[in-house]
Length: 317
Image 1 (cartoon, rainbow, N blue to C red):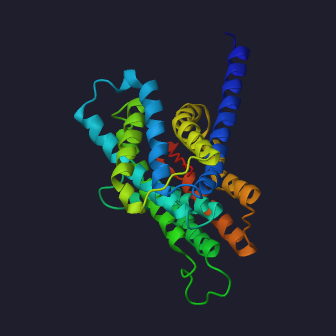
Image 2 (cartoon, rainbow, N blue to C red):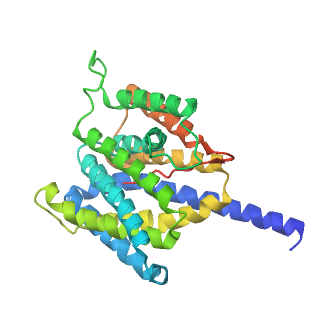
Image 3 (cartoon, one colour):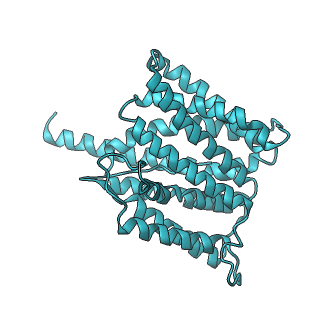
């Protein structure tokens, strides 16, 4: 292949990577409204369990050759990742049942800000990574201010956190759990193949959801078309397919491009919630959402070690 042909092939792969990753982020954004609609027909923890079991069945079937011959280290790392992933989704979906889809999406996006803050704790940071920089703390401050504006109504006075209800607190807890999940993945990725780790963490997440199912009260499931569509989209597209596509696309995109695309997820979530539920954000909430996006972008583009940036996905509902 001559130089021109190689350049055209590179451009083609880059374009495809942009489009595929944009599609993944669009799917992740729309899942907030889709799951919100499904929760009218089923309880959150039942939905999560069915969603994760279906995703695990698909991944196990596709990745079976990679899963055979597991070591104890593989299982331990997969279990740790699955624990935090399962807890994150349990908290997020339960929170979505008590707040709007758009607020849940913007608050969940704070995971990108929380990761570097957790990394500042002794024993948490990965070897070779830099300490959180000024940009990290500035992003965290912007995101916190945005959270207050997003959730607190005008005239709250001296109680700026009074507007954060149960749903918002649960979503914030899910962001912390997802941040811990990403830190575990960062440690596990060099030791376990992507296919093996992806399958193991989804399987253990399903186990966590099964164990915590009684905490969600009396289980209820009504298999309406909306519920089945939500299960199919979240399990097959937003979980099994999305993480596979993301792994490939990030190999062909500059860090700054990937970060900007990831930042669009809560925007897509807000647009779909506006279209399907008529959920509107007032001026104060819109300003808060903008500050959260600015904080996320600052944190997403931060350097984490010499010559590279860490790219953190903001998984959908």
